[in-house]
Length: 380
Image (cartoon, rainbow, N blue to C red):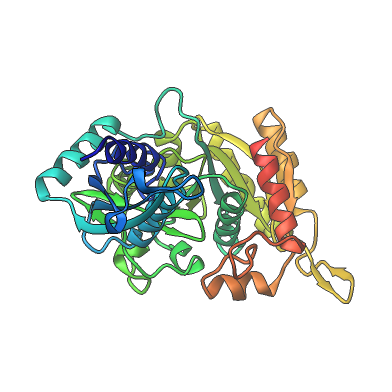
């Protein structure tokens, strides 16, 4: 091995330290995924043969050990490694990536190290920077899950590292809204969330199937949230959204206990029957240490030939805002009024949040602007 090849191998290793495993959020070097790097002159070429106008050429073989066989993101990782090698400025490098999987013992050691760092709910510790928004409603049918899905997709499209937990154990819907049909990867007892449209997701629906009823109560229900928080590797997301079950039941209280730094966002529709029960979901904050951040009025109007038709009446969001402000003793603003758009349902049921284009970018018109404004206001 020449000094040149040793220098190239060291430089490539340093460049690979900036290649991040999409699931674990750590560099492939920190995770021990780079087993070996071997640089050799290409076709007998050597640095001494290079002219002043050309660079020496090397073949670089990189042995990559994935955490699990057939890792669904292996192509993403190898593409990043190829890019890191090919962009090396001081020589012409041709990467040759050999992909295998970690041995059982090496993987067990890695998982043990990751669990040791966390040991408990990672979102309930001093210094956590993740903004946590629990999306709640007083009753079903107001579009709470649709709001959650589109808000999560908006945060991701704006560049935030975004995670979402489907905490509606009985009526889980996020997998369908994001087009997820796979289960989380089980990494020696630690689950990797499924990523769709830039959002890291977990839902009981990924395990049980959307056609089976989940009949959980009390301690078991609370344990499901604890597992979603502590047994899933979330990394350190900028934003975590929780899609709560309608009403003021066990899960809302469990969220408040497990995530006292969560902020509640109450979703309602304009009519009095919805807004009256929406107030009750916000009043959970009187019993637990959770701040109500604001109110979102969904299905506020339907636009037809340039006219806004108030199909469900009007004023419900403002009523909820005013009543919660009065009851809680601090400002609970009406943060958004979202239109009734058939596309929101049609696109969502097809597996893509309606705020996104088919390419995954945030729409610049209509509903895209509404959700961008809501996301920016929440993060302010």
